[in-house]
Image (cartoon, rainbow, N blue to C red; front, side, top):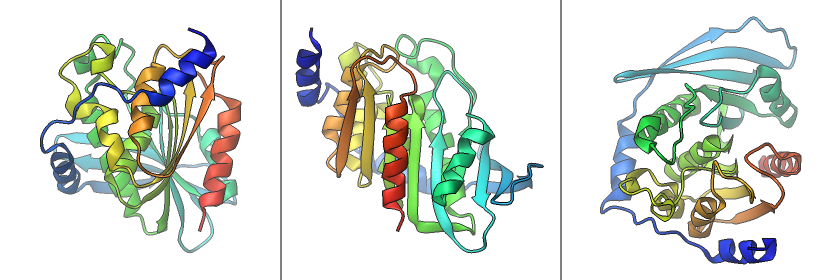
Length: 267
């Protein structure tokens, strides 16, 4: 298949996922039931522009942590919820600090990496628990006193891109979402049955945020057809950037587009 043929296929592919009956209501109730307890502890980094903290979020049966950088200036500030990929840990404090230059405070979930093959053994990746962890941290972040609830964005790469989209689909306060190579999407199209309740293609129609999605066409970890199924089911304002010669990796072109996308979205 040529690049032109691949693009033409992806632009019309909506996937084979079918949302179960009561899907949206069930997830809305799951989000409403999350009432996390929150603790903040200072992190001893010196920066005149930002305050660095560790967030601990507890909800029944789970305790998760997140990194927090908030602007040092008083008042309310835009919030960026940041999520990392499935097979790696959270990116460093320096990577997060750049968002201070845009005026954002950033909350980045620290999740345990999963090194296995998520397509072959999705149950072992425990996606539902990871979804709830991400949503619990998001709800905790939205309640922080410095957050401007009218300017909330999400960002992630790989599975982190999937979590960024998930938050944008289930939390109405999210205004903009940028996702690079999001997963998991279109399980049925990949030949993996029984995962309809965690398939991001089924969440996509719920999204009301503006979305910037980037897809690497040589990606085998997050197959482009799964990403296409997600994107083509979005009914919100959206734009899709395709990178034919990239695999599952960071794309500097997307980094630039993402920063401009968020900068333009600040109220």
